[in-house]
Length: 346
Image: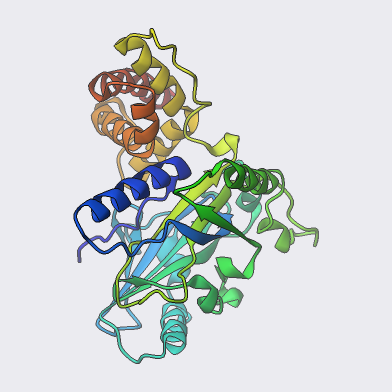
């Protein structure tokens, strides 16, 4: 079966830049403009774990394909025990049946259920890392159409530690991408900092002593709420972005670049900003997910992933800072190699 990757969740500056450019292109070419620049977005708690997706095909509700972020996984080639956790006890069938009950249809060609596997041994530095492993559903796509998750909050099997992100704290903001966004971004940042200080998801659970699990959270994912007049037959990509606390950002604080700065300095400042400890850690996580051994001969693949991830996620900042991509990639390679060799020696 073909691996169908779950869409990457970009930062707010990237989303804004891309959607404004998309709207300008549509208008200049006389194309329909189905994406609303002014819309409401729902914030849900961003869980720090490992991405996992179930793909059901041709109305088969018992045997989905299991995926991690980057590959198909099985019981014999699992990712942090995702398949093991979701197999048995009719979990996958229960999820599929509940989705189709809400959808009001008996059949589908493709059903995607996306979520995060979290808990002990998956990640560190957050409150949910203290919890027994669990899976949390956060997005559903039926025959190419992403649904409004507010209507699918019952898609869960809590007695088997399969939860739904809509049953925990949410936020709502209205964003006008064509207008001023400074105030709303400040508000989203305030909400995000609150999550960073005390994870609203974790504190709904208790530890072995019966006390609420209190600790740090990662951030918030903001997803476009479909407007009532939107025709769902017009397939729309998943429109969302993330705001994360400083501890979980993949870069640092974006520096101001002097006007007189040369191409090398601009590239160096961008790399310093975009390639922080967290992005490098994610690169190591990717290598392990893909079954790559942590040894020096694998450095090329590690460097390639880090460079592509930094350029993709921070393209808007790279252009704003006037950093040349070719020089950036060269500098990233040096930094990533040094980090990889250090990890290999640990």
